[in-house]
Image 1 (cartoon, rainbow, N blue to C red):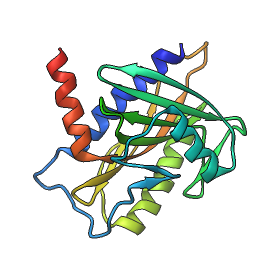
Image 2: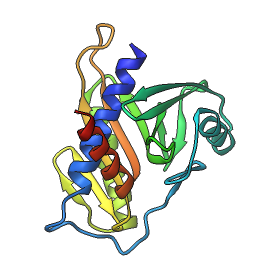
Image 3: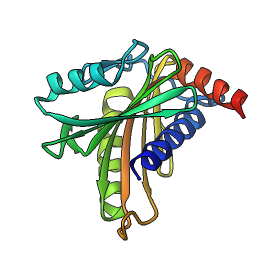
Image 4: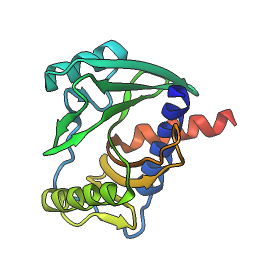
Length: 194
């Protein structure tokens, strides 16, 4: 079950970041530089399961249950805090997914909050849209997806409702920091494998 969830999260991350990140016509570029260091995990730097867990532990004073799933030529590392939440940006997140390319470079860092209702996921989305818009200016916002970019890195924000997991419907709000070039290159590698 955990392998399926990681795979679904990577596919969703790729779809979201590339669909938002590759727009060129009419895309709003922020004058404010998007950070490349999220809780000690640095975009574009080499990492592995142990270094990601150590960085998160140092940044949050939490211990984590961590596992890694190979996805195509890359992998995804999921860190679930034993304390149940990761505090970041004034919000509580349930876990962190870090997506690595075939060279073990960090392409994307996602913080994910899980809820029993889509309304709560949307409330978090709306709250984060306001905070991110205040910091990075008007974003590229369409329905349940929002994206800010400085032309190099980007921040994606989305909410969604999933099918039942263990009999319970879950809704998610995901905040992702990504390097656009690494994500694009990874998608091209994934497409070549098909």
